[in-house]
Image (cartoon, rainbow over the protein chains, first blue to last red):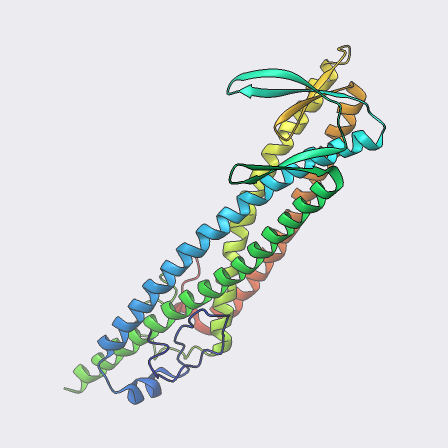
Length: 187
Length: 133
């Protein structure tokens, strides 16, 4: 990474294990110290840009997955909490229409408001008292929300590094163009 | 933001240096714009949900004389009395309206910060940058 290649980097941002972009305070001074042709630096920055973009894609996929997971958990919680309010109101039974199979609906009468079965994945279903089920799902929800926040923070950091890289590339390119123009004016 | 810094203009003077503070302004400008876009999508989704609840309100009223209202919670339809159904739908409607209003004020906040940043950046860099799509 150009940023890591021992080049002086004025970028003071760091975030967990993620790479930081190269930020240049003074282009003229930096390029004199760098000593190599502009093209070399621009190529390195282009590689950085690609790497940041691919990190961005990966993090965006994780974020979108978490974003869709939370409403799913909320839907489940809403249903169980609804049963609980029925229970607390002293209901003895509750009729529902449920999808027996795709496109076919049937009626069921719920008379047990004390327990529910939670699908834990891997073909495992466990019976829980209703309060415990609610607690488990609330924990799942806050776990997902926490991961979403930290993924978004990672994404924000990478977005910053992308902008920094683009700005650095544009400034170096402009510096190079100006330099060439001056050189051709002199000659 | 691919064309943030425009190519060097032969008539213009040398590029103004970008300080770390300037860079952070650009970063924030970019972040806030992205947030505004995301919030706009979320508001759209919530508005569609709100419409569904409003339609449901109407449907429940039409079922006034029916013994049972089938109200969807999660994946199933619970059999409720029309009183219960009315109560539930207005709770849901209120909740979504509140979320929409929160999102709208968040978006307004970000948009006004974006304007401030835009002005500050154009003030310093003028034609050297392009912050408009």
